[in-house]
Length: 326
Image (tube, rainbow, N blue to C red; front, side, top):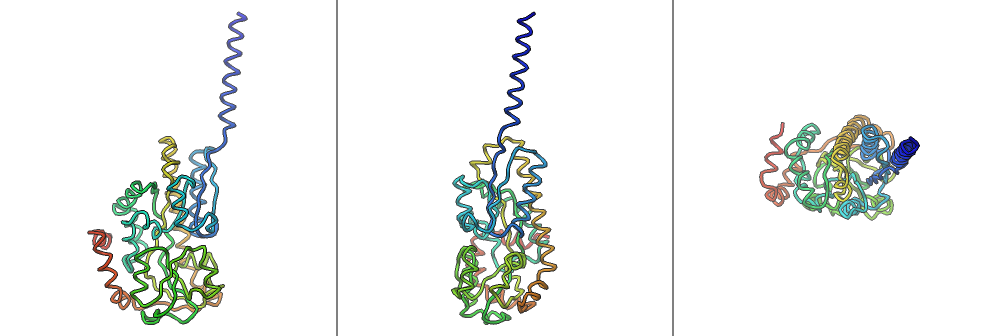
């Protein structure tokens, strides 16, 4: 009887030790890097990702935010995700194009009719086809959010026609299609990481840049720019990208939770963009920016025909399929 009692006591202590150990286990860290402040389109997506992941698997993960390019430029963050030194990044697909060339199709100017067209494309078969390419380049593509349609800003003059761009030093992302487009329009494209842009504008190293309203507002670009032209020349998706070195160590249930959390992050990101698109232009005006409300898109498209010919042929039927999405 005493022997049975001792065995029962040992089993109870063992169970308590196992449960205590499981309870005391440290949460698994997920570092997320992104280029803009915590309050912004990327941050909105990252925070919603964190909240949904904590809801789905309470206590399992601890999300650490690295906003405002604190880990370097977007390209450096993507490289860190590839290497496995960063678990996750939310970056523009224009930078992803340096690793997954097929994604650069979305950077063709005036490709998307509106945000609904872009979202239907990226959430549909074309988007899934592009995400599948990520795994071939050492990345896990979780889905596409956005920062919206890009607009021009500068300190020299209002941009009303393509001729107004001639000679202007315009910062672009490190993306071949963007560089070719601005060069074709007569500008002097200057590719650089976003982390360098504010200082370069303050010092006059560049005359202007181009970004969606959500970025112009969240970074208070009126502090360094005078003119904004609502050109809507390119739609900019962002990708929620994870390191395969991290993702592949997760259980199937945890991987499913991560994917579901990314969907929640994308939804919150788009909601933020929609809200800022509605109120942001007035905020730019209130803070002293001179707004040119529209451009002759047909004129810009005509001037950019060589870019379509140069790059459009590289993407096979993707351009046709994207334009056909309803």
